[in-house]
Image (cartoon, rainbow over all chains, first blue to last red; front, top):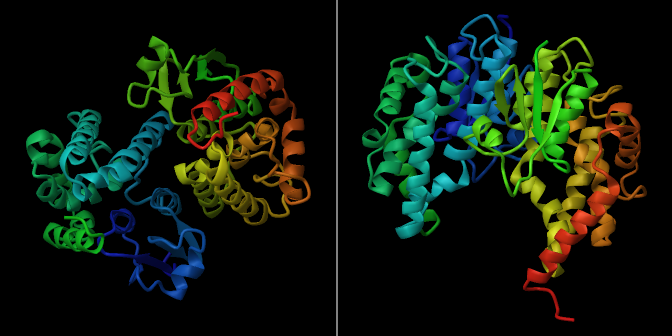
Length: 221
Length: 228
């Protein structure tokens, strides 16, 4: 598959984009990374994702695929031989998809943003809910090295980008995720030992600076 | 191929998707109706994370989230009535659209159409019509079904439209009309006529009664309602 044309329209702090970067790296697929300025979206982005006008957009041989969970599954189906991300057993696949959906709803959702974008009671409630959700994920991980078992799998790829945002959450929320969820942090660090992950995630200090910038832009204290 | 149970709710389109999928694949199952105001121990045991229906239980093993369940059904019973195309790109498109229409923001206008009044209702009508236009022109297009010649996974996800007419009857506003949306209208007729779907639609009179009561309650509590 040497002459595949793969382009990724992305934005460096986006955890959704990071998922796709990791998946492509795991599969050892060469691709062109195009950084988008979200205040000045390119014609290519508007043409390739006219519905949402959002990143990431995966463009494979000229055809766009949107939505990160859809993209990760697509990548897994197109390049099935290297580093399979979803298991082969249908029930195990269902478990993986369920937790992938859970991560999207509960960890990446609008409620979790309140951990850094609000203060006082609202923030405390958001923190509590956030930690509860991380604990559920810890429970699902159990004693496995990765959610995927011996190797990185679908849920690992879907969740680990958020690790780059943990520091910003901790600073803004004034709490320690490691204290509450040590197993999950151990898992994240284990993932970061892999090039496919460490090279796809930005430095957590840079994410924290970005969050501070967002707070200024939105007029949040 | 083992014992199959479905925990659902008589009028939930999410539960119906699962029942329709099993029906199309001729898989026998036991249907358990949940009272969502009084959830059973079984439901709480099988879906402790979200405590919602539908849940599919296959040989004692539970799966929750309708989109996840549909993929499982397709993979477990792949031969009969395939619900997904073979091509990975086409599959990605189906998954994209299911994800799109299940998004809270895309469901909200249709909910507000039912629960809202005044300005809020007007806005919902406009948003709903825009979404319907998108589904009609870009997603369904010239095809008989969203899945092409046969009902596919996306048709099942769009199945709520098949009995949306009852909601329109109760609210007394028509938005999914044959003139504005001829293709969707034709799709609804075809979908409802399919033997598996026909035998598995919520009872019209029960929907009418139940949802009329619900609507009255929303109107009674709405700050926008003018007092008679």
